[in-house]
Length: 300
Image (cartoon, rainbow, N blue to C red):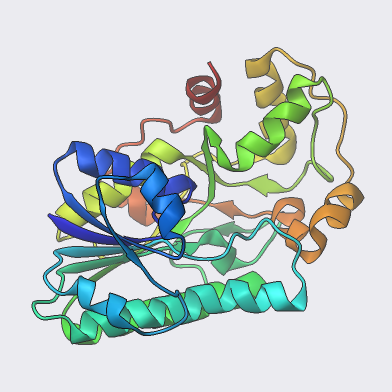
């Protein structure tokens, strides 16, 4: 296939491109940072673009078989009013512009895979969420709703839409990369109360589902991209400590995270239990359904 990808230089995108290239697909990378992209992918067609603006870059969508939209400002930063605006606009306007490009394309792609996040559901220590659950009402929920609403507009062009609501992605880097140095210094432990849910997915499983969704026309709609076995934060840090052969008893107070991330700490301090019912109903097979096997593969 010929596939256009936004957000391809991120933690998920780099691995996805690697696997797609290995399968022989042709990739067009739409990027805000062409220099960084060329360092990572010197053999790809790289097209610079401004995520929140229409432009000549949109012509690159014509003739593509698929578009994968992963772009958006990172969430794990301090949420100043300006940064919250950037979080929203990079997703809402970015997706709007991708859909606009698909509308102009001739011929049009057959499928748009447009990322969202489990932040859609809001946070809870007690509720369980699946793909049929209603949205929450906090900032991230609103971002995800507006993000998905823009993606939904692609259906008017007869294009198949897949929305993966992505959990906390574990792999060599990302969220786990920030935790490992602390644990290796014998200073790791539960973050906040430890009672909050941690709905995670191994990066390989996420990438494999996206590739499967490209190829299987019956996969359409919204899918939770989390492992089928979410854990409480206290269990996550306990298993991480076991895999690293390090203690995991020293709690990281919530206030420390709030100082670092401000309102952005809410994602980690409150959490949610998300189950991938629709994902499993497609017959998708997880390589890493449980946390211990996932962490062992990443760390050892």
